[in-house]
Picture 1 (tube, one colour):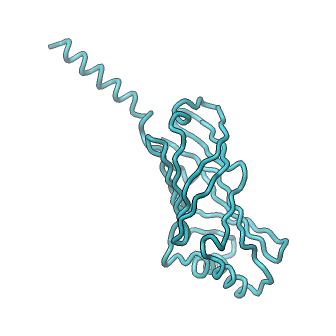
Picture 2 (cartoon, rainbow, N blue to C red; picture 1 turned 180 degrees about the horizontal axis):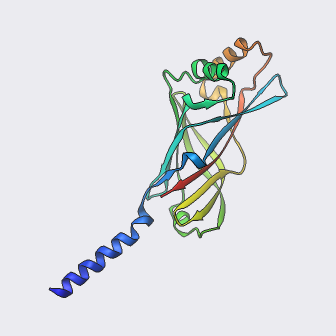
Picture 3 (cartoon, rainbow, N blue to C red; picture 1 turned 135 degrees about the horizontal axis):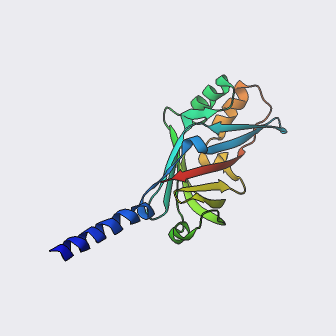
Length: 194
């Protein structure tokens, strides 16, 4: 009886101590940033960001990140409202979502302080359109329970690919601008914790 109890206790202890290796990772919004750049009049570039997004990475290293498009911040309130209303149409499309599969072995074997660069293929669901995109990222294990992923090169959102040319034209008209670029560079630095 004692031997059975000992074996059970040992198995339970082993299961408990191995749980973090299989636990989900959650995106730490307070230490993460997602930004994009708009270019108007051909030469004037402005940086904007989203204040709210969330994400997870499960035990199989599947990543899901959802961006709250209503949290767009351009530092100009009227422009934020115009983007939400005419570009993103947040009454119909309140969020954008990115999903990808990372290398599970990499996540498990990455040592604290180690950095790996890789290409990540995933799907971006934005404005009701799904597109396959490839991200060039750096993955750094900051601690046993913290991983940082950031773009090493921006990726580009093409307005015509997602059907938002009309929205950009509306913004251009409202602001009386001669031009706003239809290709938007996007970059991010996100921290996952478990």
